[in-house]
Length: 115
Image 1 (cartoon, rainbow, N blue to C red):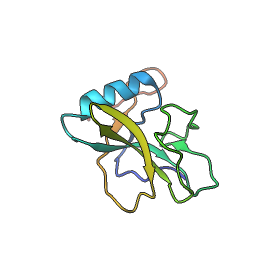
Image 2: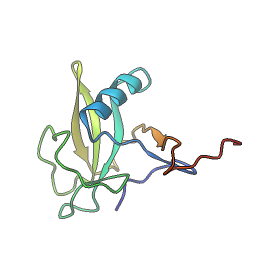
Image 3: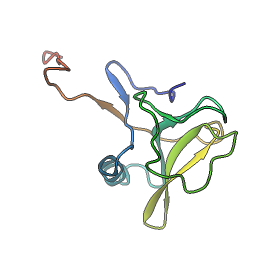
């Protein structure tokens, strides 16, 4: 199961699966969303593996602040002091902001420049 996203057309939820992506998203989004935002990490239930919104497997980065419980199905970044840390919950308690991304135009991703 992928994270539910309201991204449209050819956009997907921006994922924070590398140090560079975490740095970019936290710097970019900290001005927009002060404390918490979704990062495209989810699982269908407590026995499932975590996956990113782009269907890539979660490889342990960023590390969860605390071990997720069996009811936790969504990962999000939360600001503690001046640091963002990965936390998890059931995704039903609190709505969170998220950011959509689109592939850059290249030979593998042809973009319609007329739109």
